[in-house]
Length: 381
Ligand code: UD1
Image (cartoon, rainbow, N blue to C red; front, side, top):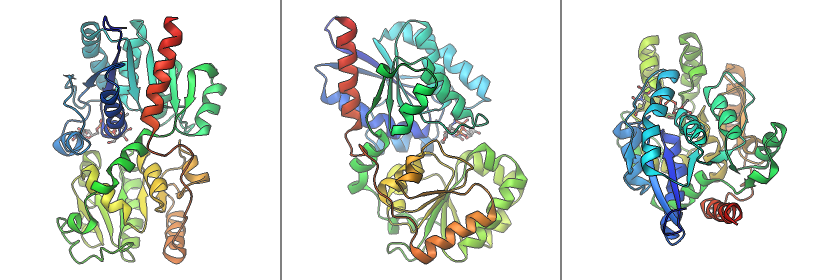
């Protein structure tokens, strides 16, 4: 604890999906400045205006106190570079606790440095498992959970997974979903779909009333790295786009792979409407009124469930099963038949309605700070 007895919490972000998770935590910390002192560290894993700055502005995240500016690299290089640059910062900042979110390389890199220096690690969004170790994020999740002292989960399966892996039940707390805190907090400020579509080439004539379009995103290595897989996926999506126009904000990783695979001509003949990565408030506005999302993102599976919009997940598995059992999600992988069948169902019946999972109520960050306070109190008694 700091000399003024506040809890000094160093919060780590690195990549785009982290930003929505840290925003409500930084806000909650500001609201409890008598008890907490927050330090925000950005590793620099994502650095583009479209991948980082737009999110910081729109989500009202304070400028990071420290930016490690690591940039891109192979997994080994990126992870190692974050660790190398984080160690002296951790020494200088001397926090009581390090808080990491999600499952990106920045999450495991900073957790590993902290725990070896004797600084306890808090993991927000713990316990999610796809049980697919070919996914780099799955490795990051399993390892981060093993070395964390306090683990906050978003859905009941999270705790079951952790207990199975030998994590002590006392460390695990089901608090809900900080990503949904951000969604509920931002909904009123979301940018109307018509405004965003007006800026996208070929999208001006889209029916912007509810359900007049779909949205697709693709960036997972399993879908985009192999040109053969990418081509089959895009041929299927191009075919579906003739029935419902599909807006496609393109991740930088995917942009490069599309060019390599030479499939831009196919896209030009379709009703897939490509655009740069969108800001959070633009994508939220588009998702809210979309007929359907087709995606391989983790976060979008949860956001569509919270919004009650059908989601077709282009992956073989999900680490977020509540979105399937309770929400609007259907897992189809990359098989064209299954993708078509799920899409047909949406067009014919409107797709799955679902319900919002327990504790996805906009108050997860407050519960997390309650949990940290209790834990620190118990540890210092
Ligand atoms: C990372 C996360 C993934 C998350 C995704 C969301 C890991 C292991 N993966 O994957 O879980 O779903 O972010 O975006 O941490 N690039 C830019 N500008 C940027 C950032 C990246 O052009 O601001 C380029 C890089 O040069 C690289 C590619 O995008 O070629 C991939 O970036 P990287 O952070 O390595 O991983 P993601 O695939 O984005």
